[in-house]
Amino acid sequence: MLILGATEVHQVLDDAEAEVVEAVRRAYLLHERGRTALPHSVFLRFPDDPRNRIIGLPAYLGEDDPVAGIKWIASFPGNTAHGLERASAAMILNSMATGQPQALLEGSVISARRTAASAALAAATLGSSVPETGVSLIGCGVIGFEILTYLRAVLPELAEVTVFDLDSARAEAFAARCRARWPGLRTGVAPDSGEALRAHRLVCLATTAAAPHLTTDACRPGTLVLHVSLRDLTPGSILGAVNVVDDADHVCREETSLHLAERLVGHRDFIATSLGAVLDAGRPHHRAEDRVTVFSPFGLGILDLTLAGLVRRRAESLALGTRVPDFLPAPAGAAVG
Image (cartoon, rainbow, N blue to C red):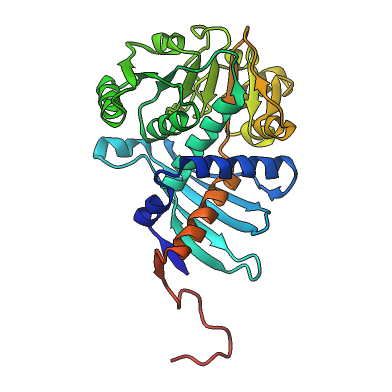
């Protein structure tokens, strides 16, 4: 068993935005072409504790070097009040020859980077006739900062960011971190969510909201909303938008905004297309200029797998990580000792 902790995962993925986005793009294309297996994620919830959850995401990604495995990720929003990260995760990769577990990886870094790469890929793919020079971030946590990092990698003309968080101190700290990381990026803090929504035609929602609390009424026509946290927008806003998803079957469940919209109208006709279909078409895509477009990614396990596979291969080439040769029991009948 190869064990790779956060330090090794960072060593592989830091400053590798282009490679990560390309890996995510390939995963979406393989999924669109039927080269994946993707059971529904399993949500472990707790009695009388609606905020916290642990999710299991099993998946298979078929390539020249196929990979199968699972991500086990906990989301405990109250952690931030105690100086801990909201999310923690582990990933297991299995041999496609024997089924045996071969690698155990710290998963929260992989999860954050694949989420950011997916959002950035959507922003670059669902383009506008007007260059994106600014972005509004609602939700000032780890995911928001990663998304901004990846957006800057794929949208070099991005020159301004406006941030908002219900916790104003958190928003100010986030803005200060942005100014320190990117001195040339104009950074401002919005006084409310409405101001953030109208500030730019590219908006990212990365909150811990469990139920809809925002409409798109303040958004300019032609705005692209990266609805990363999936439960921020009201069903009415979803029904009035051009909706792009990663996978309709996955995103229309677990009380997401799209799931609530489906319940309201009894169908999924409000979903226009998937990001994989747009990528597979192989031609430039320009989003509607007279309506809001919403990209709602459920966060497919194949994205975690593609990055975990990348990390494992690179780590092995660099001799990173810890090997545990006796992790599995000895085969029956083998000599022991």
